[in-house]
Figure (cartoon, rainbow, N blue to C red):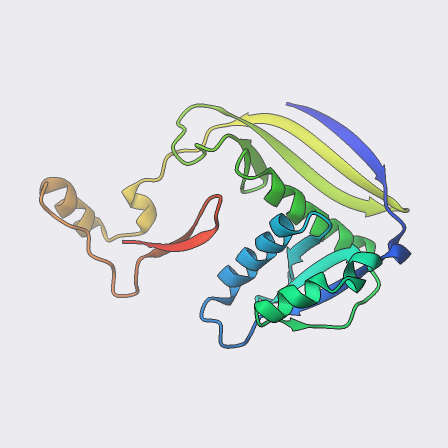
Length: 205
């Protein structure tokens, strides 16, 4: 494992602004919609940094230049998506760090996919059985600088198994013994997951 540290001067925060977009309360899956909308913002507008709010499942934090905000692009986006737009605020270093981290990971996908604490190289993250190139990036801000600590590594991700679905042992034994058997969803429903890189939500049944 090797590591490097990169120091980058923060931009003039007085030239930036931060706004909060809030989803409608009637959203059935607010966390999923929050993630998708954040990714859409980042991929749609190169001049925007965005991130799901850490303390809320319905809020999205957006950072941009004041000049870009004054163009009304974000306001139109919010209107089309029926999002509530809060007044612009000053940008704090921690907010910039969070939005930059999420935006970089989003723009690197699907060439690099986030798996736990790592970014793993390649689009076959789920199906690959051998070792895969991976990096771990730690972000921090201090004294007007952004610090990136990058560690290079190789990891192996075990393929998903039926045991990961938390099915009762008796159900699994019957399934393995009978080639015609079908696994029915549990009374509580199947296991929910997010599909990379689209982050579409699906239920495993």
